Length: 129
Image (tube, rainbow, N blue to C red; front, top):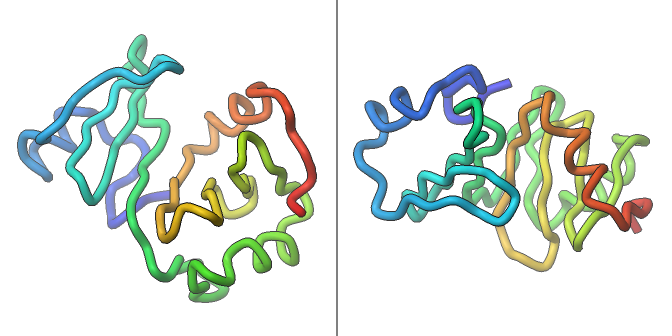
């Protein structure tokens, strides 16, 4: 999987070469180092430097099978991903490798396959209703 032609094998140095110096850089409460460019946020494991998540604004999510408007994304995930779940207000779709809050307009997080189990461990996992 890749986001905007950037694979999840990319390093922090590769992101910096491509995007420049981020206006904001920090660590979050779950141990991910964030390079925040305003329009896109890259999150890496602090311990390994491995890219875990990329969050960006997207009016439409382009998948191999369809272009899905953000406003229809929750219904699309419910219909096409039987493994989808909700946690902490987020819809998480293992099939499509994304997490999003339907109430937080147009922000979608692409997830590396290896980090999906961590989302399940957050607790309070529910079916996507």
